[in-house]
Amino acid sequence: MQGIGLRPRVRVSADGSGVVGHAGARLLADLADVTGLAAAYSTALRPLRPRGTGHDPGRIATDLAVMLADGGETITELAVLRDQGEVFGRVASTPTAWRLLADTDERTLSSLRSARAQAREVAWLQAAERREGIPAARAAGGVLPGLVLDLDATLITCHSEKEHAAPTYKGGFGFHPLLCFLANTGEALSGLLRPGNAGANTATDHITVLDQALAQIPDAHRHGTDILVRTDSAGSAKAFLAHIRHLREHGLDLRFSVGYAIAEPLRRAIRAMPDSLWHPALNQNGTLRDGAEVAELTGVIDLDGYPAGTRIIVRRERPHPGAQLSVFDQDEGLRHQVFLTDTPYSGGGSAQFLEVRHRGHATVEDHIRCGKSTGFGRFPSRDFNVNAAWLELSLAAIDLLAWTRVLLLDGELATAEPKRLRYRLLHVAARLTRGGRRLHLRISATWPWSHELATAFHRLAALPLPAT
View (tube, rainbow, N blue to C red):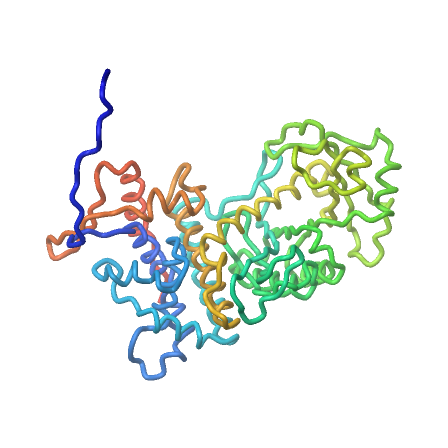
């Protein structure tokens, strides 16, 4: 009988030197510099440093964003950067970082958003120079023109009393932020921290988040580019759609695709639809979707008060195991979903294509899930303003990860979620040596993704610097 080999014996001590953990996080810190995010933060937060002494508030904000992108969950985890000063430089203490967040009011928060928009413009210009620019979103096996903005809300549970935390519609307690992600890249364009009892379909909140998201898009892309706004049924409020139409009439090429609640008039119309008007639905790769059909109800349902040209489309399909079904669905034996859009048929807007395009909105749930592991899954303070600032820095952390994928990575890593990027690249250890009056960060040659990480650093060094 052959014995099972044991691991080599090791002795463990806490006296090592010249060794760096989370070495890949330096990639994020340098990217914040190369895109101009750190400099823009410094300008935005200059009023919080009146005497010009101590830590630069902009650098503190950048370090917090890097820490969150690296997977940190609390302000105390800045120690990962702070205690490795040879690689990450001078990093503020935990109390200093707390004071920065506490001093961030609504005006300062607006300045932080503007700083992030400036960095985004640089990142998109760098993407245009290095590759083909911002990638296209996809549906039905093809590309979607322009940009796709996905809005959705989520629930964040609080386990202690926090300002404006409130009971949620699911019986929990906490916050109910509304967020907007760019489907093309996964960038977090905007977010609004709200009490847990905030309405899911509040039009004013949707308008605020959309306007903030549009302000994040560089001028060269915001004007003259097709922009699709997707939401679930919470975004079907007439005031919100009227706002989108108003923006369209004033120069922005916006279209909407929003979910729609199924009420009794709609149920009757669905039941009355002849089988001949139902057409096979499509999968995201363009193939026929087994057991699913699409029909258009425009002209059958009264859409009075909605923008002119609004269409209404329904999909029915055999429910998958575990699907949440309404009483209507149970009676019919099929799951139904309805949405509204103002994309005209003449513009390539067949009901089949528009339905699969709208179903792509579901990817926002993945972005939110990843965002919860990148900062906004838990909030650090009892103070609402501190938590709002934390949310904004979390959005910046998500952007840093998105820009890393677009600008620096190839293959499967270019589409990898944060958890995979951290495991393969960001949390790698390295040895720090000196030679030729320079520091060298030496990644183990046996690390499976050492080549990808080294290539990312080389690409970062080759990116054009923002104009000063």
